[in-house]
Image (cartoon, rainbow, N blue to C red):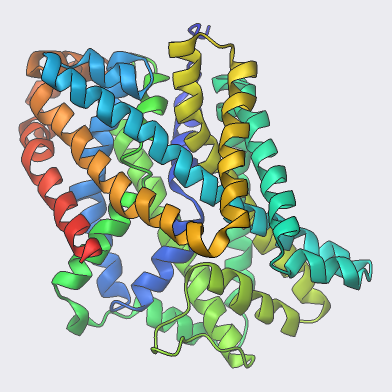
Amino acid sequence: MSAPRGQFSSNVGFLMAAAGSAVGLGNIWGFPTKAAGNGGAAFVVVYLFLAFMLAYPALMAELTIGRHARHNMVQALRGISTGPVSRFFANLAGFGGIVVASLILSFYAIVAGWMVAYLAEPFASLFGASGATEWLTGNSAARNLTFTAIFSGMTMLIIAAGVEKGIERWSTLLMPSLIILLLLLIVYVLTQPGALTGLEVYLMPDFSYLSPKLLITAMGQAFFSLSLGVGTMLIYGSYLSRQESLPRLGALVTLIDVGIAFTAGLLILPAMYVAQEAGTQIFSETGELIAGPGLILQVLPALFDSMGTTGLFVAIAFFALMVIASLTSSISMLEVPVAFTIENLGAPRRIATPLVGLLIFAISSVIIFNFDALFGLVVSISTEYGQPLLGVALCVFAGWIWRRDQLLAELKKGHEHIEQTLFWKIWPWYVRIVCPLLILAAFIQSVI
């Protein structure tokens, strides 16, 4: 039976929700192109190493604080604070996490809305609605507002249903669908001319790229790919049973995330070189592979167009994959401010969700009508500044502020003999010293 505030009913439900939070649009298009531009398999090896050396310890900090407190980010950090100064910083970090998560969702919903529009476009083409096709793929404010609203509504419907019937149920449906679509698309793309060139770029290591820059890039990708720093994993941890082993679950989440990121590379890089074989430009003027929205909205649609009727069905499968990846991430981001509204303001979930969701949609609307001025600014403030600084704050709370005996007592729930494990011998000092320094190094590099 669920706790009044909600609780994951199974390990599988939590793993699918946490992995879904981590596997988003940036993971699918960001990781493969970063790998290709940084030595292929050389980058992949460094990324996999750092995912467990940096992202996993930081993930454990969020999960442990969350399960111990069983509250939203503000109350969780206040609960482990030891005095007025630490409580002040708890409020600062807690509210900062809510603001940053909301800002990320405000621009993420716009990009996800593009995915929904591009998913609808092949259906319009099948029915010969050329006017609708042009509108769906055009960059008008009306199109962006309409599909941002549709995507935001989908996210709100899932969150309003609660932890078990909303987040858990939909994550366990969407994540397997995402993996199946991903594998089917990989099988198809690898049979096309040019795919092996992309596979070679992705999997053949070029160790001449090994440098501090590659390490920083891989470090940033490993940390941010797990949705760390804004409290999403802290909130999910608060819905976990006391009987679960947190180190084991954290390791599984990390494995699933890096596994899907790696698998996405088996699709994206070969698909880009298939597009090049078909006559599409895949390199920018500076000689770098096109990444981000340009990849998804220009390079790959051009590839699908070159495939004729078959391309319509491949496009449907691909953009269905992107919508699913968007949705599994957006529900975790919306849950951060919704959980605060429920627990601190006493609002029922079915009222708190649309109130918070509509407020974030209003921010998205302002961005849409002032796109050139605000979109990049909001992305930069939230992901380049807010997320890493909050990540450092969470490591400091877990490593320096939280009493060590309470930390150990929480970890022993579900893992009784953890004191004798290698994890306990390394993790407390590692999250205390190494993680903050590594995150700050990545932050300084990205700012410079």
